[in-house]
Image (cartoon, rainbow over all chains, first blue to last red; front, top):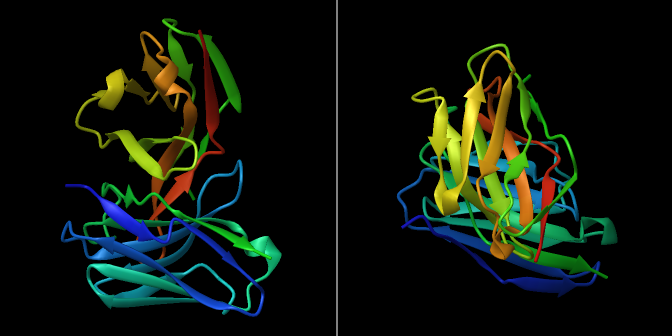
Length: 115
Length: 116
Protein backbone atom coordinates (compact mmCIF):
# COMPACT_ATOMS: atom_id res chain seq x y z
CA UNK A 1 0.00 0.00 0.00
CA UNK A 2 1.56 3.29 -1.10
CA UNK A 3 -1.19 5.59 0.06
CA UNK A 4 -0.82 8.99 1.63
CA UNK A 5 -4.10 10.57 2.71
CA UNK A 6 -4.82 14.26 3.20
CA UNK A 7 -7.73 16.09 4.74
CA UNK A 8 -9.59 18.20 3.99
CA UNK A 9 -9.71 18.00 0.22
CA UNK A 10 -10.75 21.65 -0.08
CA UNK A 11 -10.47 24.52 2.38
CA UNK A 12 -11.66 28.11 2.20
CA UNK A 13 -10.49 30.45 4.93
CA UNK A 14 -10.37 34.12 5.73
CA UNK A 15 -7.18 35.96 6.51
CA UNK A 16 -7.92 35.99 10.24
CA UNK A 17 -8.84 32.31 10.52
CA UNK A 18 -6.82 29.49 12.01
CA UNK A 19 -7.06 26.13 10.28
CA UNK A 20 -5.04 22.92 9.99
CA UNK A 21 -4.21 20.50 7.21
CA UNK A 22 -3.70 16.86 8.04
CA UNK A 23 -1.64 14.17 6.35
CA UNK A 24 -1.38 10.49 7.23
CA UNK A 25 0.61 7.52 5.95
CA UNK A 26 0.80 3.92 7.12
CA UNK A 27 3.76 2.74 5.07
CA UNK A 28 6.18 2.89 8.00
CA UNK A 29 7.97 5.84 6.43
CA UNK A 30 10.01 8.07 8.74
CA UNK A 31 10.26 11.12 6.48
CA UNK A 32 7.33 13.37 5.64
CA UNK A 33 7.18 16.49 3.51
CA UNK A 34 4.98 19.50 2.85
CA UNK A 35 4.96 21.03 -0.62
CA UNK A 36 3.13 24.06 -2.01
CA UNK A 37 2.00 24.02 -5.63
CA UNK A 38 0.68 27.09 -7.38
CA UNK A 39 -1.37 26.72 -10.54
CA UNK A 40 0.61 25.56 -13.57
CA UNK A 41 3.82 25.34 -11.53
CA UNK A 42 5.83 22.46 -10.08
CA UNK A 43 5.64 21.66 -6.35
CA UNK A 44 7.91 23.68 -4.08
CA UNK A 45 9.32 22.11 -0.93
CA UNK A 46 8.28 23.78 2.33
CA UNK A 47 9.23 21.44 5.19
CA UNK A 48 10.87 18.08 5.78
CA UNK A 49 10.41 15.97 8.89
CA UNK A 50 12.66 13.00 9.52
CA UNK A 51 12.06 10.76 12.52
CA UNK A 52 9.49 13.26 13.80
CA UNK A 53 12.04 16.08 13.87
CA UNK A 54 11.85 19.15 11.68
CA UNK A 55 14.89 18.76 9.47
CA UNK A 56 14.32 21.29 6.72
CA UNK A 57 12.44 24.59 6.64
CA UNK A 58 12.76 26.22 3.26
CA UNK A 59 12.43 29.75 4.64
CA UNK A 60 8.68 29.42 4.97
CA UNK A 61 6.82 32.31 6.66
CA UNK A 62 5.86 31.71 10.28
CA UNK A 63 2.16 31.86 9.42
CA UNK A 64 2.72 28.23 8.36
CA UNK A 65 3.49 26.01 11.34
CA UNK A 66 4.21 22.31 10.80
CA UNK A 67 3.79 19.61 13.41
CA UNK A 68 4.64 15.91 13.41
CA UNK A 69 2.88 14.28 16.40
CA UNK A 70 4.06 10.79 15.43
CA UNK A 71 5.71 8.98 12.55
CA UNK A 72 2.42 8.48 10.69
CA UNK A 73 0.92 11.92 11.04
CA UNK A 74 1.87 15.36 9.76
CA UNK A 75 -0.07 18.57 10.31
CA UNK A 76 0.25 22.03 8.85
CA UNK A 77 -1.25 24.77 11.01
CA UNK A 78 -2.32 27.90 9.18
CA UNK A 79 -2.81 31.33 10.72
CA UNK A 80 -3.21 34.82 9.28
CA UNK A 81 -2.68 33.67 5.71
CA UNK A 82 -2.61 35.96 2.71
CA UNK A 83 -4.54 35.52 -0.56
CA UNK A 84 -1.25 34.67 -2.30
CA UNK A 85 -1.03 31.57 -0.09
CA UNK A 86 -3.90 30.06 -2.05
CA UNK A 87 -2.50 26.90 -3.62
CA UNK A 88 -2.56 23.11 -3.62
CA UNK A 89 -0.74 21.80 -0.54
CA UNK A 90 0.78 18.40 -1.05
CA UNK A 91 2.07 16.00 1.55
CA UNK A 92 4.58 13.28 0.72
CA UNK A 93 6.46 10.57 2.56
CA UNK A 94 9.56 8.47 1.99
CA UNK A 95 11.51 5.85 3.91
CA UNK A 96 13.96 8.05 5.81
CA UNK A 97 14.57 11.18 3.73
CA UNK A 98 18.29 10.55 3.75
CA UNK A 99 18.86 8.71 0.50
CA UNK A 100 18.84 10.22 -2.96
CA UNK A 101 17.34 7.04 -4.37
CA UNK A 102 14.31 7.17 -2.09
CA UNK A 103 10.91 7.53 -3.68
CA UNK A 104 8.55 10.15 -2.35
CA UNK A 105 4.89 9.16 -2.35
CA UNK A 106 2.43 12.00 -2.61
CA UNK A 107 -1.05 12.50 -1.24
CA UNK A 108 -3.93 13.95 -3.27
CA UNK A 109 -3.44 17.41 -1.79
CA UNK A 110 -5.58 20.04 -0.09
CA UNK A 111 -6.73 22.88 -2.30
CA UNK A 112 -6.64 26.03 -0.18
CA UNK A 113 -8.35 29.30 -1.01
CA UNK A 114 -7.63 32.32 1.18
CA UNK A 115 -10.15 35.13 0.92
CA UNK B 1 23.02 21.88 -7.49
CA UNK B 2 21.21 19.45 -9.72
CA UNK B 3 18.41 20.50 -12.05
CA UNK B 4 16.14 19.22 -14.80
CA UNK B 5 14.77 20.96 -17.87
CA UNK B 6 11.59 19.88 -19.57
CA UNK B 7 11.34 21.05 -23.16
CA UNK B 8 7.85 21.95 -24.21
CA UNK B 9 5.23 23.14 -21.74
CA UNK B 10 2.55 21.49 -23.89
CA UNK B 11 2.65 18.40 -26.10
CA UNK B 12 -0.33 17.42 -28.24
CA UNK B 13 -0.79 13.97 -29.73
CA UNK B 14 -3.60 12.00 -31.28
CA UNK B 15 -4.97 8.92 -29.61
CA UNK B 16 -2.83 5.95 -30.64
CA UNK B 17 0.21 8.08 -31.49
CA UNK B 18 3.62 7.91 -29.87
CA UNK B 19 4.11 10.01 -26.76
CA UNK B 20 7.52 11.62 -26.23
CA UNK B 21 8.10 13.96 -23.29
CA UNK B 22 11.58 15.38 -22.98
CA UNK B 23 13.69 15.81 -19.87
CA UNK B 24 17.33 16.81 -19.66
CA UNK B 25 19.25 16.85 -16.41
CA UNK B 26 22.22 18.71 -15.07
CA UNK B 27 24.21 16.85 -12.45
CA UNK B 28 27.84 16.52 -11.44
CA UNK B 29 27.25 13.07 -10.02
CA UNK B 30 25.21 10.09 -11.25
CA UNK B 31 21.63 11.29 -10.87
CA UNK B 32 18.54 9.66 -9.50
CA UNK B 33 15.68 10.65 -11.80
CA UNK B 34 11.92 10.37 -11.50
CA UNK B 35 8.86 10.92 -13.64
CA UNK B 36 5.62 11.82 -11.90
CA UNK B 37 2.16 12.31 -13.41
CA UNK B 38 -0.48 14.68 -12.05
CA UNK B 39 -4.06 14.32 -13.19
CA UNK B 40 -6.34 17.36 -12.82
CA UNK B 41 -7.02 18.26 -9.20
CA UNK B 42 -4.95 15.36 -7.90
CA UNK B 43 -1.60 14.73 -6.29
CA UNK B 44 1.51 13.36 -7.96
CA UNK B 45 1.77 9.71 -8.88
CA UNK B 46 5.10 8.03 -9.52
CA UNK B 47 5.39 6.70 -13.07
CA UNK B 48 8.94 5.40 -12.91
CA UNK B 49 12.40 6.10 -11.54
CA UNK B 50 16.02 5.65 -12.59
CA UNK B 51 18.45 4.51 -9.93
CA UNK B 52 21.33 3.28 -12.14
CA UNK B 53 20.26 -0.38 -12.18
CA UNK B 54 19.20 -0.30 -15.86
CA UNK B 55 19.18 2.45 -18.46
CA UNK B 56 15.75 1.50 -19.83
CA UNK B 57 13.17 1.85 -17.10
CA UNK B 58 9.63 0.56 -17.43
CA UNK B 59 6.89 2.19 -15.44
CA UNK B 60 3.19 2.04 -14.95
CA UNK B 61 0.49 2.54 -17.60
CA UNK B 62 2.81 1.50 -20.45
CA UNK B 63 5.31 4.31 -19.99
CA UNK B 64 9.05 3.88 -20.14
CA UNK B 65 12.10 6.11 -20.06
CA UNK B 66 15.67 5.70 -21.23
CA UNK B 67 18.62 7.17 -19.37
CA UNK B 68 21.25 8.47 -21.81
CA UNK B 69 24.33 9.77 -20.07
CA UNK B 70 25.91 11.05 -23.28
CA UNK B 71 22.88 13.23 -23.92
CA UNK B 72 22.10 13.95 -20.23
CA UNK B 73 18.53 12.96 -21.01
CA UNK B 74 15.76 10.90 -19.46
CA UNK B 75 12.91 11.19 -21.97
CA UNK B 76 9.54 9.58 -21.26
CA UNK B 77 7.81 7.58 -23.99
CA UNK B 78 4.68 5.56 -24.58
CA UNK B 79 4.06 3.75 -27.89
CA UNK B 80 0.35 4.50 -28.10
CA UNK B 81 -1.43 7.36 -26.33
CA UNK B 82 -4.79 6.91 -24.63
CA UNK B 83 -7.24 9.66 -23.82
CA UNK B 84 -6.68 8.85 -20.15
CA UNK B 85 -3.00 9.85 -20.46
CA UNK B 86 -3.96 13.53 -20.65
CA UNK B 87 -2.28 15.05 -17.60
CA UNK B 88 0.68 17.10 -16.37
CA UNK B 89 4.00 15.26 -16.31
CA UNK B 90 6.90 16.27 -14.09
CA UNK B 91 10.49 15.14 -14.38
CA UNK B 92 12.47 15.39 -11.14
CA UNK B 93 16.02 14.83 -9.95
CA UNK B 94 16.93 13.89 -6.41
CA UNK B 95 19.39 16.32 -4.90
CA UNK B 96 21.36 16.02 -1.69
CA UNK B 97 21.01 19.04 0.58
CA UNK B 98 23.90 20.22 2.75
CA UNK B 99 22.15 18.67 5.72
CA UNK B 100 22.16 15.28 4.04
CA UNK B 101 18.45 15.22 3.37
CA UNK B 102 16.89 14.47 0.04
CA UNK B 103 15.29 17.20 -2.00
CA UNK B 104 13.34 16.58 -5.19
CA UNK B 105 14.02 19.23 -7.81
CA UNK B 106 11.18 19.33 -10.31
CA UNK B 107 11.10 20.49 -13.88
CA UNK B 108 8.47 22.99 -14.95
CA UNK B 109 6.16 20.26 -16.20
CA UNK B 110 4.71 19.26 -19.56
CA UNK B 111 0.99 19.13 -20.16
CA UNK B 112 0.07 16.24 -22.43
CA UNK B 113 -3.05 16.77 -24.53
CA UNK B 114 -4.58 13.77 -26.30
CA UNK B 115 -7.11 14.29 -29.07
CA UNK B 116 -9.48 11.65 -30.45
